[in-house]
Length: 101
Image: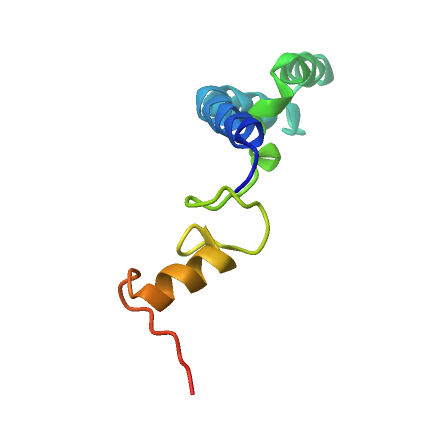
């Protein structure tokens, strides 16, 4: 089980990403548009720098929904390999059959 503080920190980041997504996209579009005036682009870049860092999508870590484990994450099931194996062996994941011979 992952530390609760790490899980909560990641959850706060997810909330910030949702909150600032539209603003970040708008400012990035202005900052990277070569057809606009350089001062307008520079002001957009400064405003973008003032937006919280944790509102960036790349700072969110994929974590297992069951255990909070950050590594060996299967995106399709939103679980780590360990949780997938345990729940799959018990038959709790629909459509998943653990092969054994």
